[in-house]
Length: 118
Image (cartoon, rainbow, N blue to C red; front, side, top):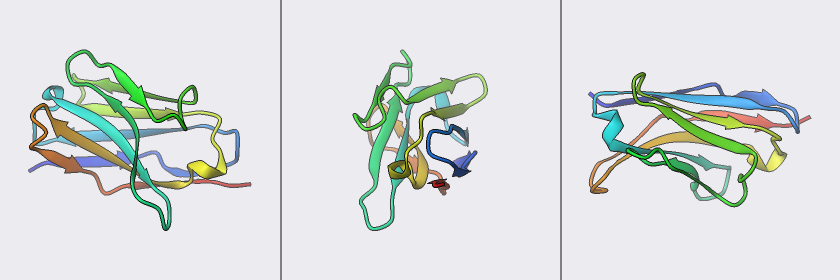
């Protein structure tokens, strides 16, 4: 049974930091590209960051470049998102995503709420 379980969300003040973590099970984690998406109320879900399966190369949305860092640990089957210098515009539900090399298999976590507010 495939599972992606996110943790680490919460309420933080503008300028603060949070670290999200996603624990994966039920599939060959090291063979999948891992991503974080987010969805704010009334908006479409958007890609925040991706890290490739083999090289572990990261890519980021322009809106988070220089502030967010994605990383993965293939030994622990986890992918993290370190979020610094948070802004109110970063408020959203953040979702962990796994995608196979072929693109045929895609899995989603249940999401974790991040709220940036003073």
